[in-house]
Length: 295
Ligand code: NAD
Image: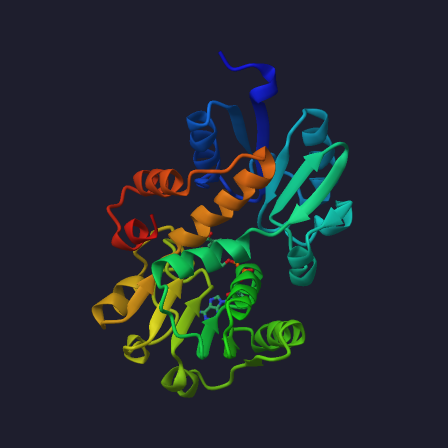
């Protein structure tokens, strides 16, 4: 019998999050550890709310005794003024995806960047980080750029359909990592010709945004490719990169490891990483080799 001491409540706040696998990952791991753990979706779209409701939603979660909240699009920056404190990396990134609620305090963390880094480290432990190209300079792109620089990238060139956005992110990251060469890119073909690795951080490849974010001809070994889209896991980019002989890390790594980090922060328990990876693999219906390599 699980006592009330072992009861945990947490949730995810975001817009249009019904397909998220995060609740299932947290609850299955909680159950495996003998905790009565409920994790609910607080979907702004379903509740017909705007981000202005964030403050009330945080207060409601606190009143209901939640131990934490994950925060996703479009609230990761909007939540910052509502917090009492932040981890150093979340402060640097200016984005929070995990809020720990304890003793009346709200402390923000960012497990997205660590999640991406851990997924990449495990799927492609030998990845050469001397010259990395990243496509996508949105919220997720900020986390992947931070991760790749934190992992020791020497040069990072960022592209986006919105060139000003790419330059802005490059400026911020260049300030945080002054020893690296970080720039907004102008010529994708030229950058790819020199690149050792590619990080993809746009929605291209999702069911709603089919296709490739760059011509397949630019994917040539020994280039490695790290994808962050994970609906589906085998995106057009993952398939094209594999077909052309490149080593590939899929978007599952970031999805699982951001949850691993948040589970640990929320519950104070050490999650079993292999169990969470296996569960994610079941949820996505895959016998995916890249994910199997992470366990
Ligand atoms: P966002 O809307 O904040 O940013 C996307 C950026 O991509 C925008 O700046 C846009 O201009 C740019 N872009 C779109 N199409 C492009 C193209 N063809 N070429 C160049 N740039 C292009 O979105 P986000 O929050 O950064 O999320 C991006 C995607 O990352 C999501 O759609 C989701 O699939 C994925 N994601 C995965 C995880 C994970 O855990 N694996 C976590 C977060 C997001």
